[in-house]
Length: 301
Ligand SMILES: C[S@@+](CC[C@H](N)C(=O)[O-])C[C@H]1O[C@@H](n2cnc3c(N)ncnc32)[C@H](O)[C@@H]1O
Image 1: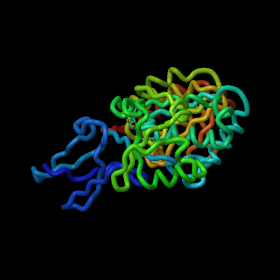
Image 2: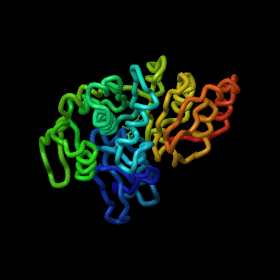
Image 3: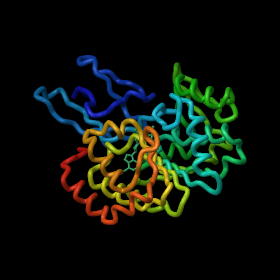
């Protein structure tokens, strides 16, 4: 059977290997870790040798992905400065849900270390990096990560030319590199397997940053609903960070509306803050959220 193409995913920013269908010239990404069968659903077309592939889940990620709030393209120093100012003291709990191979969590850890020094940055560590994909988490927990020349360039820029402080190149194959993550960066991130809709129960107390970026379109409506309800319990001043792919969601009215109903207000592109005054006015917000989700016939399959 010929694999056709993915029609539901924006692969604008990813380093994963591109596969091209020679007939349609369309591109798709082969999952690197996840068994292929778990990853796609096939829809048979009229031609029995031809199938349309819809990506159910993608690990596509990169170092210093450009859709981070307060970042200037791939320069994360503004994001680190913002976090340091927003949480001016005390322990800060960063949860990186849907962390994929760890590129995102490492990018944040590097920018915090570079911005405030290793010692001061410790109050943000360890970053709890969580993904439902056990294959990718296993690899990440070993301290091994892939990257390409674009990642390399962004790492060098964000570390102010100190690549060797954070990584060792184990292998190079053309434009692709296999890296070993060095201490102290490795210790700054703690990897765990888990689904956001369940693991949000661990987010308690104050000074929380919840990253849930470029993942919402992979969730079923039920999981999305469960996760949104749990986000509604966040403390005031908690931050929630999403990505561009979440904004391009195929039912754009659902997620922003749900976030609004739980008192999350936008501070910057992709940066939301829990606004307590809003919440007080919406005492029965759960009923509104249930109505919103019930009225929407979105399905991710
Ligand atoms: C496109 S990657 C996003 C990676 C990273 N956050 C970024 O923005 O570059 C999506 C990730 O979401 C994970 N994922 C999908 N559903 C999830 C769920 N319910 N809970 C946790 N992770 C999930 C996938 O395994 C995948 O690694």
